Image (cartoon, rainbow, N blue to C red; front, side):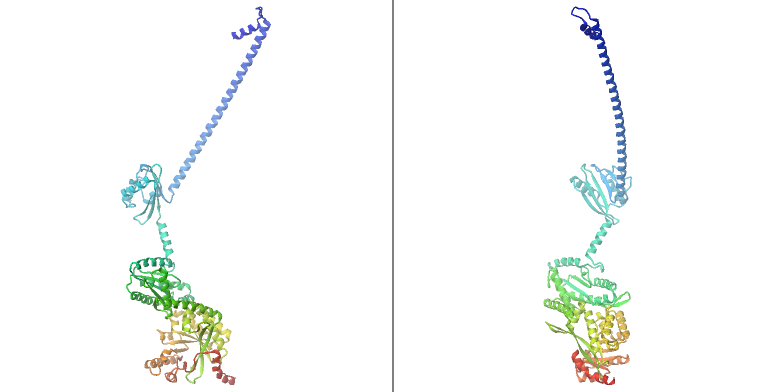
Length: 636
């Protein structure tokens, strides 16, 4: 302070050395005022500093509170996350384990404990893989070699690759085990029970290679097995390929429905399977088509024996939901390496042989021959021409009269189908009718015959009947009755003037359905005739099951007359049977006057044959029938 006063005093001293008190006073007052101002500034600064410190303290408090709240929230989140993690781990469909670099367990979920029945006393943090495996050996869920398993596991982990094992448990379960390596030398193991998946995969694989209806291998699996069998052929062995389908199976479907047809296929599949030896294969390769691979054959006779065994098994009667069904089968046979060493080549050969079996009359087997290729092409061409002919109206009917043996007068005429192809000329019915049956044209073709025959007969004298032949497929078809009713209605022909001819083979196919159809026709007034009587297997039982109006004795018995004693005995017996059952007995194929006199003497009431007339076009027949109109006109 004295330094400040000394400076003020020096400023107030005059040059003479005197002190100017006024100046000194002003200087002192000014100094005090300045000092006061400085003091106030200092106090203000201190006050501001105190306020700043208070604000800092408040901000720090808030920050501490916010950080504490955030930490608490994070802790809560971690706890929730841990809970979710534990819930996820313990509710996994897979068993989960985690091991550290020393091979000590870190995590084990509940799924692992349940999967293997492991005790919590063993499966706890710190236990080793060996501890778990040894414990599982005791509980019966591990049967492998512990040392070998651990050595394999550690070798994979050391290489940084996943260690995968598929384990079959003693109780039949299958478990997939994956050990994924971690960076610290540890690993994560997952155990998944894939038993159901494997079963499903096997089921899917089975479905992919097997027919769902019959359970037999399907076309795809059959081709695989054929390819495998042909590998053996290249090493010197032989195999047989049998290709077969069911004769007239379509008629069963049409008459009884697809459900019965499916049941029939199932039973046939079982019978075929029972015909084979171990190592052979039977497959369903189409609707009613089956194929068989026969291995280890030494000679064609081995295949022929199997083919006969199959035919006998297939043709045995079937009882399907109360329906008696009888079918047969045709079989085509090819051999490798004789007929080919490629699958497609062998299949083609067997298919051509099958057509050969059908051409021979069905219900038989046929070996492939090189000439069949040309016949197959001709058969294909015939099919195409047959379809065109039905559309173009190239068919016609000829009629062969029935003649009373009492007065030699015409009583009726049989409608016989004729086909003249523009390129091939006249084609015999025996050649094209089986093809029409096979390709499904026999029903529309038969309906055309019915309509045409009824329309033609409506212009004949009113006492003359018309006879129409029906195939087994037509008789069993659901549209038979409507077709007959329609033909009668459109032509105006009286029902009693229509005669339906069937053969014994018709009755062999589903007797119950056939008899029912015949009874319904009889109720309409239509007459029923059995054609080719005596050439079947159970003629008398058929006559007992249905009261036919006429029996036509097959020409094979008439051709032996008048000399063959066995023919005489048969014709006499059949004629007597017909007389006692109040049926007409018609002798077919009468060609000589001697035969006519013989069948009359043996008791036949009617004849048909070249002796009286060959089959005639409707125009020529009308001339033949003209004399029969006169008496009718006079009586009117």
